[in-house]
Image: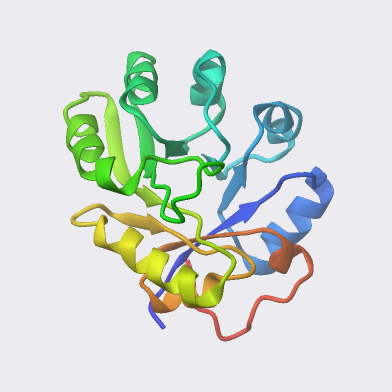
Length: 194
């Protein structure tokens, strides 16, 4: 297996629990989906790359830019322009690969044009794409293939969570967002990551 990047999803976990797992698995990246939780925890979690994986609310973008190194959930040009206005930032585009109305992300048919528009914004470093698949294994595989097809020359394809990371790896994920499986200390020992 090629090396992957692991991101520890820290929602609803205390700094002590998080530190234990970071040390056990030698993980250098954490992710949070709520700004409020990040504000409470991040002062206790230093020297880590911090990823935002929650839905972006316009009024919170400035603060999110201050607290996070990478924003994985950009889904439209307005959000991208707002982030761009606050200075340099690494971002990913979230694509609604499950095509569910309740899911965040740009629609599949609009993804290429959004990628092209974001690449024109001088302060944004578009490093990859991100998506969440359906819970059905067969559907998840198809959806991960769709997401991977948008990667092109971008560095990262962030796909795969605790329940579907094995499929995501098989379909070419470069970055896993894992919470439960790490906190339960059930990560397969053969998994190679950086």
